[in-house]
Length: 319
Image (cartoon, rainbow, N blue to C red; front, side):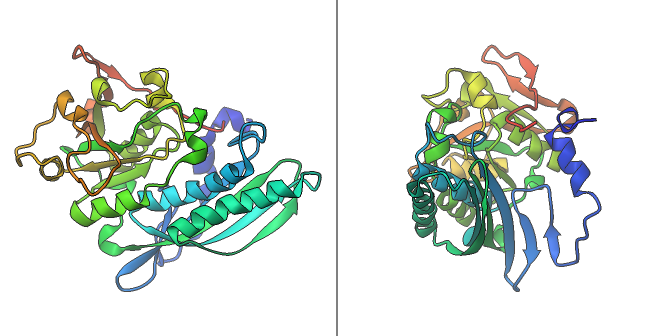
């Protein structure tokens, strides 16, 4: 059997089996970051991501500054999805000695700029000769125990919300996105969030990850999904990767407060069009796109004419 026959998700399951985890590990593989015991009031968050030439970027269309920005931004987005704050990173760089030094300078400037914005200390790393550029970053963050948010907490009756707009990131957003640390922290300060993930592989696939981890189903509304101006269609909003927006769930009563409505908050497609009315301290729009239902009801999209159709849990996968 070849790796491509097994697929990315099954390969991760296969390779992650059997690794030793001691009692200090609260959450290992399977979320946006590992969770480790630390202090009385906080957990450590630990994540890593690679950015590889001709997979995540190419030198013809991407400035070195953008490459560095994206390489660190992917990690910071993972910390945001856990409700935390990024703190320390190590950076490993594989690069061809034939490239102009300005490429390496630009990558480092992009990393430094984003690190400075979010208070991340770059504390070390490694370097190697490589035919193509490979940037591997490991990032440590921290989160208060009462703010930790996992994929596995979604509950029947929750509503599903997303920040920003989705789809078409290949036209530039994937290189210039701003990790949603501020949004996640402010939401968690004022509201009880039950589950959260960042959208790196597409709405359809990343929402499925929440559903699988939480053993629930979901209905999302076709007319409610916020489609980016760079997306050609709803299909792009559902299945394109690298939006790096937050996808999260909260109880209906919390949603009533969030959207400044009564506590008898009801679910319908019209609520999905109500954006940025709940938390005026933030400029980022929030859209209600659906609801968490019993697992037996499955994973479906409600079309604007009322039809229910199954959603394919597909998105960007490497193989």
